[in-house]
Length: 467
Ligand code: 5GP
Image (tube, rainbow, N blue to C red; front, side, top):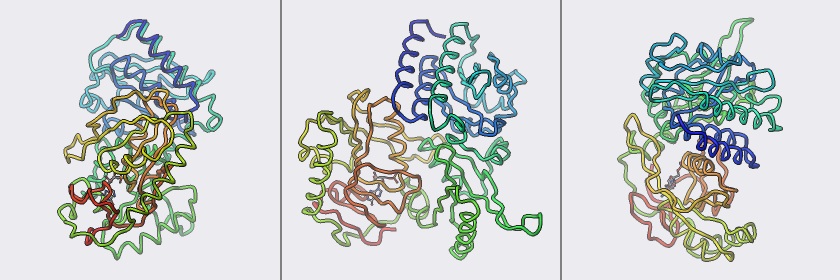
């Protein structure tokens, strides 16, 4: 599929990425990215879970979400072969009995597959797979390249102290029961709100599993009398999400179950999304009952221009100290960052470079996904990057953007946010520099808008009647 020189360059890039002191996930992502790019195909790294019997996608490139959600990987015969240490090539997935979901592969545009084991000594711990969109007889050179990348993945796994014993468990702890539910060829949501929510997760490229696992809560002798089945599991974040979009009266009951779940399974991370939060999340993307509601003017000044100035000076002082002699590249995310970043860079006392990016909004279509509508112009490779955002709310946007920027191999990456609504976090996200931590409520001014209004206000204000 490619010539030796291109493979050499890709290998060199991947080795450099693996050699960086970055988190394991980033290093594995860099390997998969190199494979996908240089072979002009989809690619994934599949690792065995801690029990050694189930496989989960650990990292993937250029593969649609529905294909990643297609279900049980452990029954896929081609994977079994790879996990027994063999290299597998399938030139026509539509007519090969080893492929469990040929129709989904066809829908995803996959024609040929190459699977190479990731070996840790004598033992296969996973596989790198290449998904070609055109029929392909993989050459010896293609196989040698992917084998090199699989060896590199094994080195990254083995050299990571946190995962030497429980590599996959820590990275992607898909609960055993999840694989059973992921047998479903298509997801049958119990409630339309769940489907909307799954679309938002797809939008942010966050992997999810629907109703992954039931937790027994009470027993009568040997039989379970009460269970709790969270709506979603996000393997990449090891987080369960429960939507409470039903009647408020049922929320008390659910809260009680949740308390019990936390007592019995303290290691389980779960976020409950209340109806109001959920409706507001949907409204942000133009759907749901609150989408058409309108704010009615300024309610009160939350932070005056003078208070903002003081705080921005303090942040600038901290950044100047932390980045002395490191000339950071500050990347603003359009458009709410405008006033904040303009003031920040004027108070910073060291040289900085600046750049901007913008992302698109949810379109509601079935192929909705975050799109970068304005990419950065400067290279971030080897740079100390600081992303500058107006506000962190659910954390979805920044989680996506940070992942996206990390893939470009900056030397370091931090986030500076003017405002942080910590209590409304849906996914765990910590900004490194925060101007003000605020409670609920929608704010405008100092660059932040509502419906493109009020950006020009010098103060940060809350608005009336905003749901
Ligand atoms: P997240 O993905 O963290 O939920 O969303 C962050 C984005 O939501 C921000 O960049 C901002 O555009 C928008 N946002 C969240 N809360 C507010 C708010 O109170 N006021 C304004 N103007 N935008 C907000």
